[in-house]
Length: 193
Image (tube, rainbow, N blue to C red; front, top):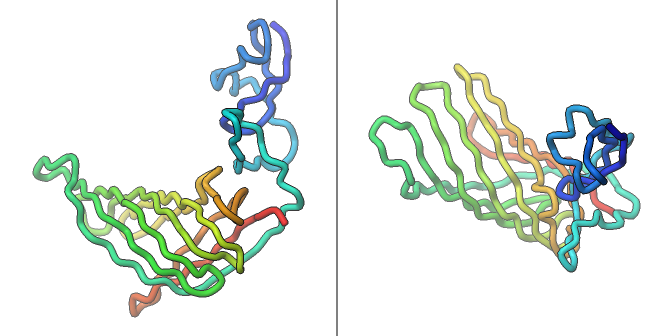
């Protein structure tokens, strides 16, 4: 057994792995339980060029907080699983963001649930426009559940999805829905300057 540094390109991280392989290429995700991540914050944003998965030079990462209102329109789509009583469904997403994020988005949602007050959804949407004056696009990934009326929502920027002046974007978004149904977002993000 030898201890070697290995790079896991799809995650953009280096790990110290203990394994019996012949070199760093033998390190796999299965090695992670015995791996120690190198110190520092994991920055998943990557730039791909010529087929290599090297992490781009990020420059100085600046933390930002933006907020504003948005409108959303959901339309039912044909579900793949049409079994009666499955509780599964699919919807299109169209949004218009206002404020520091001046953009539109389109995406798809898959949802499940058979009881009132409980269920879940996952979604991916592509956001195109300007963020604090920088033009580009990025993708958001949603993971949400409602358990007996208690909500959980996690929305992240999909690693490596930024384009244009938003390459390297990393962040999380919160959605706030007021009593009257008006939607607001709060977006905490990092972007190289």
